[in-house]
Figure 1: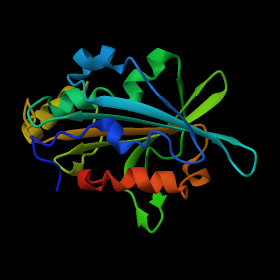
Figure 2 (figure 1 turned 60 degrees about the vertical axis):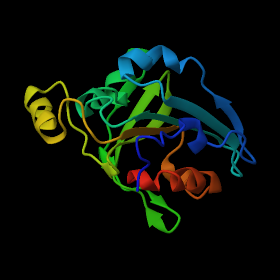
Figure 3 (figure 1 turned 135 degrees about the vertical axis):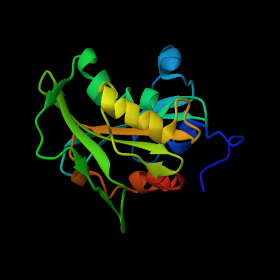
Figure 4 (figure 1 turned 180 degrees about the vertical axis):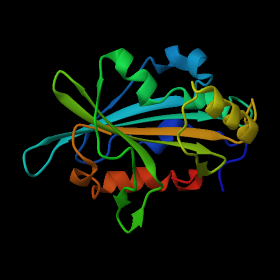
Length: 195
């Protein structure tokens, strides 16, 4: 059961600060986006380590949370990598699929959106989820009037369910790091949100 309104989660509590074997950096300055996002409960940590095969692995987790009634689903849905990353210099790359079911240990995570971006030949695989009231909602285009209207009828203008947005990005495909204990630890905390 997701936390009640009085139990607002602290985002960085989901993301261990210094897990064994990883170098970690915590992004500062995200609060500059609080007005646009209509929440200041957001955080981002990047984990880096060298794999046994000599590759350097970078995994970044970004999360944002909205209390019930704090923002509409359509507001949260406008802040996806599709909308935000190109403005920061990332070029979308074609992929065979736009949604995936990621294996994690003995379970499969809820269906995530998947994108691939590049910036100066550096790839970033991106997976993201939008949870509403403990369930993952299907990505929709909030700039499409019909889809926007449908979301308002479904969720209301000021959506009364709590919302969590989770984005994972990495320079390597999911299969290269899915078995790392850190992934299991982080995603365990997201189970109550339907991820």
